[in-house]
View (tube, rainbow, N blue to C red):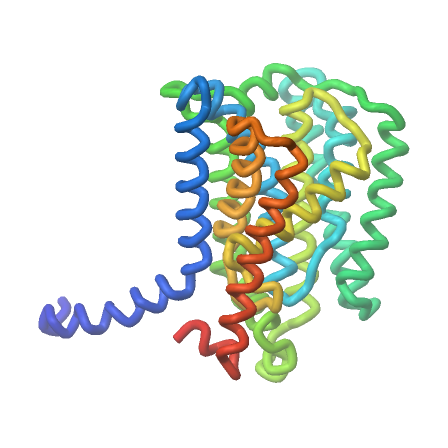
Length: 339
């Protein structure tokens, strides 16, 4: 039984509530931006808010959202992963070979593809930790290797996928809810939240805030980075499998890999994660990805030239980066961001 008066309990609870709200302000800003842009998009769309429109928008958005989640994990440790787009493409090409046949065979193929993606991430982490190379150089090099493997698997676009499984994951559930929303929520619940609440997840934030101080405090730097990059590879592979379900084929395209890599970084920034590391959330990156995808759809319904899309995306990204930079310039210690 709690013997504290109600007023005192409220006072004790309020600082924690304010801390949580302040900590996730970037995520809330991304949510508000997405709601505003998506509302405008639906208002201008000729068909309005219909199930096909919602499913199409969700399918495109979730692909980038999962890759953005993959990018978030290394960024939290003050690193970056330039190979996420190529792991995404490699998983797509591999899935177009393996996710076929009976449901059981297709499910086994999915497991194999996700294992390969995790292995790619582990290789990135191993080179960074044991080879002591910079993440940006390491992942740029390994990304080229992963693309070469994808090109060997799919010299020309093609392949197949289990149609029953693909239709179930890219269609609409009863009530008009896009199945991809459920997939995205499942990824957040099964990958991001356990990682964020684990000791290694907290260690990743400590490394991003001050790696030297984290080391002196007994944080296992190597183990944390290995897990972080391995999970990034897993998430990128999940995105590649979902791309196969959406397109029913595989394609080794360096353009697709490059666009997803760059847009994942943009989504991370828009979602409120600091590129300096130590602060942010993969959920914010999810909404940052949705913002980027909706901008393209918004330009379409306004019948503007496609060439305007990079301009709008660049302006939004520049604004997000500038706001984050201004905040960092105001503090002498990054821990003050959470006061």
